Image 1: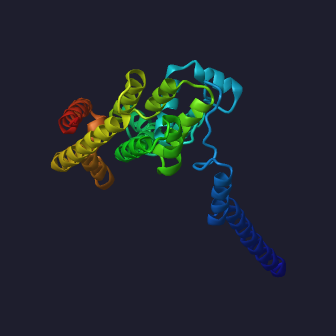
Image 2: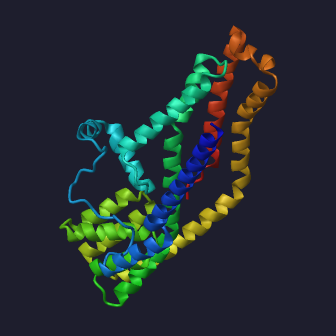
Amino acid sequence: MDIFFYGFAVFLFAAIILAIEGIYLWWVNVHGAAAQRVARRLQLMSGSPGRAGERVSILKQRRFGRHEAVDRLLHRLAIAHWLDRLLIQSGKQWSVEMFLLWSAGALLAGATVVVQWPMPLAIRAGVMLLCALVPLALVRRARARRLAYIEQQLPDAADFIARALRAGHSFTNVLQIVGNELSEPLSGEFRIAREEINYGVPMSEALHNMAARIPLTDLRYLIIAILIQRETGGNLAEILSSISHIIRSRLKLAAQVRVLSAEGRMSAWILGLLPFGVAGVLALTNLDYIKPLWTTPPGIRLLWTALVMIVIGVLWLRKLIRIRI
């Protein structure tokens, strides 16, 4: 009996090692550095450098789900269109269906956790709602970081376009050059605009689509200047150089304001999270001391009053520290 048991253990161990080795070899062959170098070389040889699979669909309507019935249902909902626009702006390769599935999974995970704690129904619902909003928070954070990085790239892109125009290139060729020479994520957006023009979309519509994908005021100024120059004429290179100087000055001023308001933003975070941190510590260390807050009528009224005051205070602090330039 012992021989069979030890033999089974040895064979099981060998099978696990071989499975891990197989998974590792598959990952290296598909996603390894050598595979990525080959993919980049093939893209360069095919004349389409950049992100793999970044192609504009000739269909005007994006798919929101993998299944046809789910896709038709989601296209009828206004919130699905808003989520799709948010996912495009964040740069994530998620569909609306996948995003909703992740939100539902986070909601179920939160529900599994809160049933283990003796909390009132309102607090449980609030915790579950916060868990369901985690994917949305991650997408919005990715969107904010991507837009901030694109905003840093805009002055260099404007200067690059101005130099290319001074060299005698047409604006359509300039879009292709910018898409090939600049770094991601801005170069990918210029490539998409160039491909839309190749598919027959008017240049004004392609530029407006890029402004919809990148909701930045500086980019809108850039696009408006280009469209006005195409209708009225003028020195576009000089205009773009001026816009580049203005964007750099605004970004410099925004950085100075961000430094000066750092203390206020830190105070807002501390004041907003301190009540929840203290309540969590008391719940872990002395639950009987804080339990009357949700087990007695005066405690429940006090809890709701404190929650309303915290929300008002957080919104007021947010309004104070958000300085638009």
